[in-house]
Image (tube, rainbow, N blue to C red; front, side):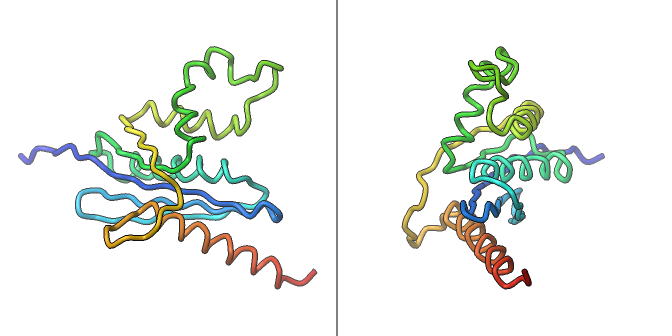
Length: 164
């Protein structure tokens, strides 16, 4: 009988948003064994930070649903916001996801989902510098950034040519 081998995954995520039109995109590149998987999507009425969170959520949920043998994820992001959310998890829970003024923290809906899925699997969050220059070494952070920016441009162009 074959033994199920537990495996690791490496994930690169990014999000982008056109602030005037509030159109955003997110992208994730996943490496699971020898497979490279690219996920992406667009949203309207959104923000940059929401796109950064959605990139992570969608990547981790994909792995949980499609690759149950993955035991650990190394998640690389240029988003200080996302990394900071993970670091503040206990504070959020202690304060019931409220600010000092008693309001919900920003993006409370997505923050709750992110923290819940981050507790389902071991995730090593790695902060990488944003907007690096291309070199001969593959940098998948640059690739997800390009995917996001392209999707946002395409969505804005469609919006601008749509009949009023």
